[in-house]
Image 1 (cartoon, rainbow, N blue to C red):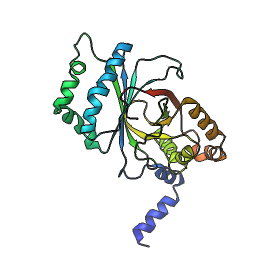
Image 2: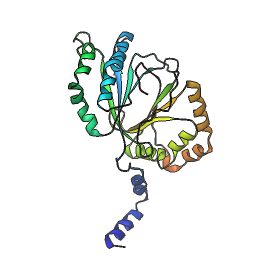
Image 3: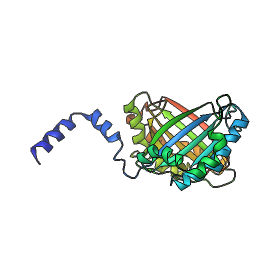
Image 4: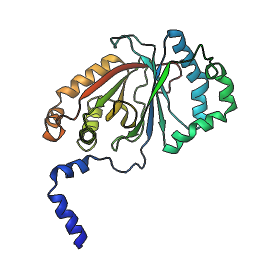
Length: 263
């Protein structure tokens, strides 16, 4: 062993907590998609319809031409959520940061898009198309680097979950639990079909990880969660000291696809 390798190994041997932290860090970014998660705030059902029409008839076709997709457009499933909302969630996957940064320029040069979306894009000052947009940029996980579309049925529903952590270290340990700890694999085996998993790089509620699950109907989702929670592997995994206190708050939202959604 070379001297410098021996010194490095000796130093790491005495830093058990930091070694665990290093093991929890994401590996290289090759092959991972970036997911842009948008919450578009609207103040009426009419504004919501106009936004959905804009995505379905103008923006999603333009994104197809730009090589971006599949794009998910979702409204709140009011049968599953406590509060009614006219807001819309949008998930857009990108293959690279260059795709994220260069999209606006591509859309600005797409005359078909500009013509189809003229009314929405040019909404007047005193009657804006939306109230505000909140955006997060998420990096795909090692064990699920790309977006999937597991639910196909007409009654399909989606569950968006945001796990906040009280520190970056503990957030990385929760990501480790999903990757090396085997939680994503157990999700799949118990019927919790993932759409994406992402570590929030930019956005609010940092640090957090965000993921979405897809089911053909709500009953399928409820049955899968019941199976997962009762599984002995989950009980063993969740009781490990290394994964203690990794999540400080959970946001749980049920969604349904809007017209034109590709997810």
